[in-house]
Length: 67
Image (cartoon, rainbow, N blue to C red; front, side, top):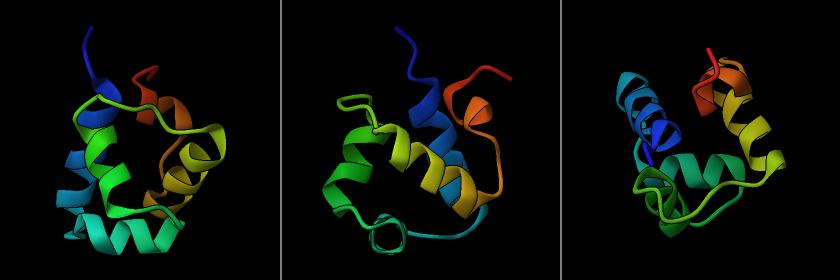
């Protein structure tokens, strides 16, 4: 299964020049969780998806690969 969410999250972090630690602090999760998401080992909760969408000013649909 393709990890569209993880790929998009990593691309957005790089585009915004934000590290895993800084992003994690901004949305209230651990750095390890960001890594797990990017590697497709865990999936974020809906509240975390919304926080990420707001942080990067993109839609939840974009994050999960629906658009």
